[in-house]
Image (cartoon, rainbow, N blue to C red; front, top):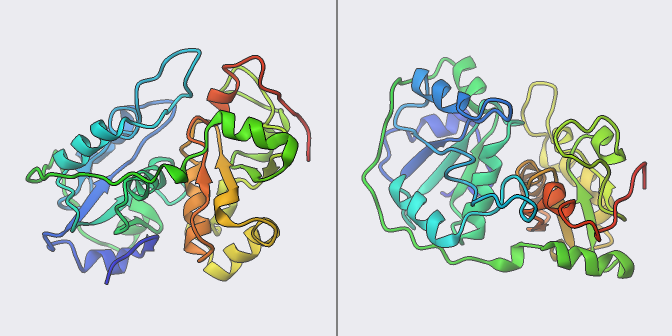
Length: 285
């Protein structure tokens, strides 16, 4: 049996010693980029290897052109997965501090983009692992390298030009995954310009989770996305956020609800605002 969206800590723990299962620790803190690695070295799931959001799961930032976390070059991502011991046969389990954290869903999306379907995010994250009294390890770990060769599906990606072309025609539905205050152009503390892409609606990624930090049941998630799914096929729905990371959380929730695979705008808001000619909206739509 393969896992392609989420996996519980109880189920994942059964496969700790399965050589075909690769656990990847993706913990990352926006204000302290090296905290995730420090936390990993202090305690992690036994056998897990570490992937850094900036260094392993993103490409080179070009000021004034890219967003804060551009997609890695496919060749580079292949090399990263090979170094981490991921093969075409691997079941990958990506985890963060908690489900609502940043980078596990990003790795999940990147592997889907690379054509690797057997990847799931640990529901509840490392906090749930600890809360269930499951074993931990310390220090750095590695796996035998492999030869990973992705088969990249670029139809999962939307560009700024794609979105610019659809604003007038409304041929797709654009969804902003940030908090509602940032969507409205209020309380922007991360990017130099506030607002959202015109015609986008607000569906914050945090609302995919219950009060305990676990994903809501698929039926509840289907209701959350029903208003857009009834009007647009998955390939005509585009999620974005600040830098293309937390939007992957919404894509994961959409897929876990059994509604298909929508698109991601990887550059997101931090790329959109690098071009003065691109329109900006504020308030609610």
